[in-house]
Length: 250
Image (cartoon, rainbow, N blue to C red):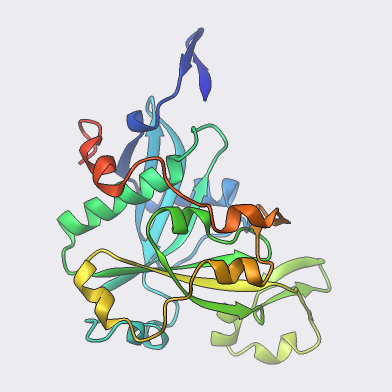
């Protein structure tokens, strides 16, 4: 990837991206602009910004799941503060290939160093409006659930998608009875910061080939060739990512 800065054309390098903790206000403004949903998650408490040449190009927001009691049991003996959800990840189109997976790797390193009580990370892929989780697979997550959509429906007044889970918790479930459901899948991924905890996973790990069998291959809301479903990989290992951290990242 090449980029023009101050009249000079330079080749952008993934290793020169710096990840920093940023305030909610800055993170939320970026997410509203670049995330496909245009919405933030109020539960997000920890925000990482991906900077190149001091310009913000990506945000990852972590926080508690909307209903932690329903997911904490995915890994046995998890303390109430022992996991987080990566509930928003938004990048512009400026950074070079592999930037997202590198930034995920760095964020995990920082969480492990500064919040060692966090043992695993949960995240979901909306394989209807967004993607099937290629970045998660490239970053070492395991796939633990493939389910048909039941939560994303079309608001008849705006003709726009609406996620109904938050509204269920607000006692508005009856409002969506006649809303048209969008067809597609939601995927659940888990990453183990503490590798020992992998043995405590209470649900089976689903092979990535299952996505191909079901014809699930989505990128930016558009169905893709199935070839990419099982070939997702990262150019460097997680260990190499950690060794290549730029000075000042932590």
